[in-house]
Amino acid sequence: MPNIAPTTIRKWEALASIATKIGCTAEKLRRWCLEEASPEHSWLAGTAAVAADEKVRIKALEREVKELCRANEILRKTSAYVEMAERA
Image (cartoon, rainbow, N blue to C red; front, side, top):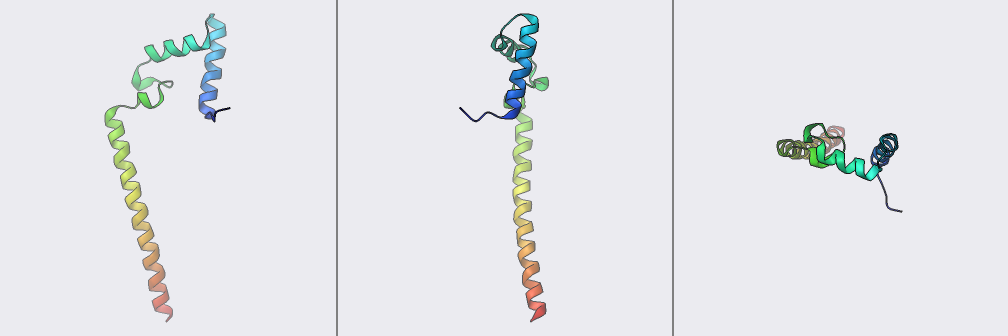
């Protein structure tokens, strides 16, 4: 069985529950939701719902996090080096 994310399972369960109440299949309801949902409010569209400018912002933030992690590592090493020098 493929590894399926828990959020995907919960979404599918919600779709299946609603579909039985309105008299259609879960797949039909899922497709309708994907076609009709606006990208900014779509909980079904997933990554497709992320606007291009948001993707750019996310990439910039990921780069910043990477740089900050590098800076923290340098500071940790420098701090350890200074501490060793002070002990000697």
